[in-house]
Length: 383
Image 1 (cartoon, rainbow, N blue to C red):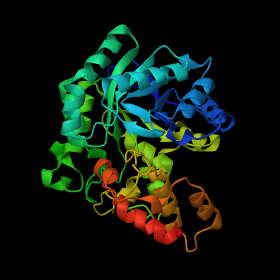
Image 2 (image 1 turned 90 degrees about the vertical axis):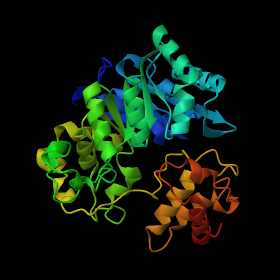
Image 3 (image 1 turned 180 degrees about the horizontal axis):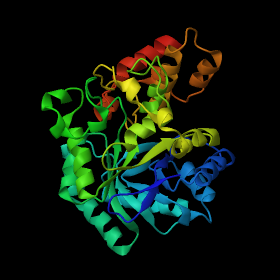
């Protein structure tokens, strides 16, 4: 494993990190081998945003006696309210669930305190102009957290936060589908804007370029989320490029962006950890994504579910991401497997329980037409 400085935080992190969201609902006996594989691979940075109590407790058990081997990203504003994940800007709830995180992880400190999922100017103002930022800064002064970060999917909001100088690092969604450049762009000069006219940047939001370069210049380290686009980039039929990329392609792509320190892989098995953790040992030929990108048309992943659960809480208590995942799996087959139908049917609430309130759509960072897709799920699964 190779390591990089996480901006100016003083932390040196593995190029491949671990995003633990796929460990939710797993029993300890299933989860522990995954954490063991993470540590064995030399991965030393773990993101834990999920507020679900069981997964926090199980990760804490798996890290017992090994806490000093990892940097933990813990989130401010991710709450477990009425049995569901929910973002909160309530100060008391923010404190409650951050303390819960430390207690269940059996630790007295969190290395990186992440201001969770700030994607709009209104939310930015709530976080940075209110009591939340004061509370977070107090924890940093007391040594309870070592660095302050923020997670976001929106480059404009992320850039605004970076320019305040109030955060030490950024967790941001980066992958080739989000960062497309025109086919005639020299990939070696992706971010050397002076080398080609601005009109060559039509395939990418220029704010993204500015964001990465500003982070590099200011010493704001970036950890990468959504790097595989929820697996969509790994299959030719769902990849916007018409061909499948490998996890190695996606890792290499993200790590070649300015400011990026670590790619937070998601995995459910030790084998999945090993596939991505081998990045440091692969050849340049195996990690080269330029052949795939060279002839790619402009594309954006808007409308594609990333299974990130930011659509929750659902008033009908539907696990929306799980419904979307089952639907995507079903639509990718000629005949829906009976096992998939069974798993869908075993859900407490399915798409048929959708009340079409639209609250999920208003909070989705990728503008997924959830209500329409819920209707499609009812058509496919007849429930």
